[in-house]
Amino acid sequence: MADDLPFSAEYAKSNRSSCKTCGSIIPKDHIRIARLVQSPHFDGKMALWNHFNCFFRKNSVKSTGDIKGFGTLRYEDQSKIKEKIGGLISTGKDKAVSVEVNVEYAKSNRSTCRGCFLQINKDTIR
Image 1 (cartoon, rainbow, N blue to C red):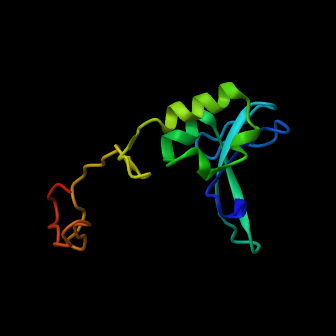
Image 2 (image 1 turned 60 degrees about the vertical axis):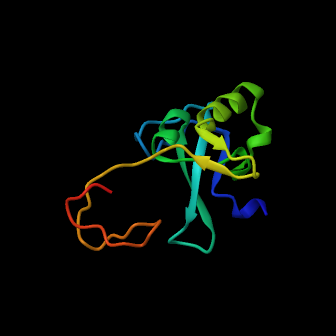
């Protein structure tokens, strides 16, 4: 279903929308990409629009199939999005594995390993 997609892309219809990452205005006819979130005011999803570059600083997209309206974009813009998503590696089983890894110190003793489910102590690398 197209309504269940987590992201949306289109060209700005006017210059009234602003980027939710940097706060500046998105000019008319420039590509904008949104993360669709549940609205606190009505029963449905609302778009949090971002500039192309700002969007990929905070969000990671698994495939172009996750982006509503991807097929309506110009070929050049589709290619740019595919390049940004290109950080994925195919495993050969129709699954993509993300190459992105985050390393940080555990802030508390409450975290557990997602692989072996052992507790991770505070101030150790996870």
